Length: 402
Image (cartoon, rainbow, N blue to C red; front, side, top):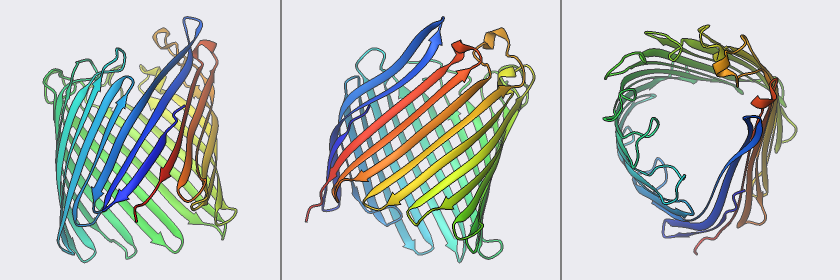
């Protein structure tokens, strides 16, 4: 249960914050017919601050953070420079560095990471073109299947333009090249294509996002080459003064050049029939039945299932007094095939996922925050049961220099 006590100040454009904290995450499951609890926790002292102009404003902005915990040290520095030549042309450049050093066994590996980017944007009336270049390098203190040194280069080109008056069309292409000298599988060339469309009419709104990706391994075995696509359509339709329809339609799919049991072709579809009701200007409630289906090659039986669930949510906001957002979802997952012996952990199950975020302003300067989540699963096979619990609390005091 993290407990964080903070103090912050604002002096001549410099904001400082310092505090002490503790965090923990736990999971409960069955291993070899014995109940097992997996948990991680760490106490820490930290100091952070930022200075400069706000987002989107010309000038220089920077922030930094140092955290010394019971198991590791972490530091981060970031800076951004923004320059507007006129209302139609701007340049934004960023530099950042991260450092993590563990000093207790079992606290993970250390690393150093640096990154930089440059973004140019030119606007003509309601149309705009932007170009983006970024480079990132990361070095680990130890190598494994999941921790390997790499360098990543990205280039992106964006175009936005209205189509039918009160709407916005966005098109983008991004090229990425990653090189990892100590492993073959992590090297790739990637091309991403993006389409998004936003449309307003009256109180109604609709957004559509589509992404397509082509990834090709550039070294060694090429089994991982694939095409990937995902899409989301999410409208908000007013059905009265208090009722709003908020359905969602989503899909995702992979197609490999050489599909097998490891690199399997698969796709998923989701239909979410959300309805929102405004009880007052401060309180809104939501209910949403959901149907989700995942399909894959027959050789990969663990990715073939159907999921039926329903979600209920509450959003209560009174500025500088209280903000409560809570949701709970309950459902069932049914696998299409009985999984093979090597995947015995995949059995049909009933699940509940609950989470909440609470902010309470005790007074104008003193604020108390709580974030919590609880997610149990009850499987047909008891040994597959799993429970995850998380709780974070934060008590902060803020004062402004006059």
